[in-house]
Length: 80
Image (cartoon, rainbow, N blue to C red):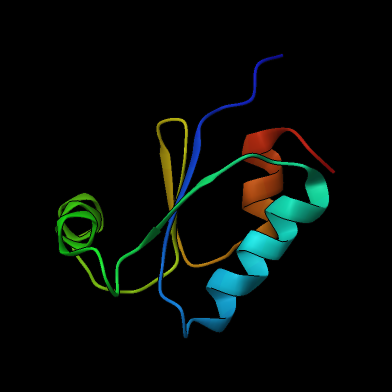
């Protein structure tokens, strides 16, 4: 099965962002990381998508998760 496209909107100081990225690395999940602390265009995109400024925002395929919900992320990716 093809892996769904994974994008994370994060900031350098966000603890849960680091946890999410470590989790993806550990599980061998490829992802695109946008630092919304520095990238204003991506920050705007994230706020339009979620209506808020909280990070991380994780997009998996068409699903958007605000915060790092490991169980939900695993379920959407079909990994244990």
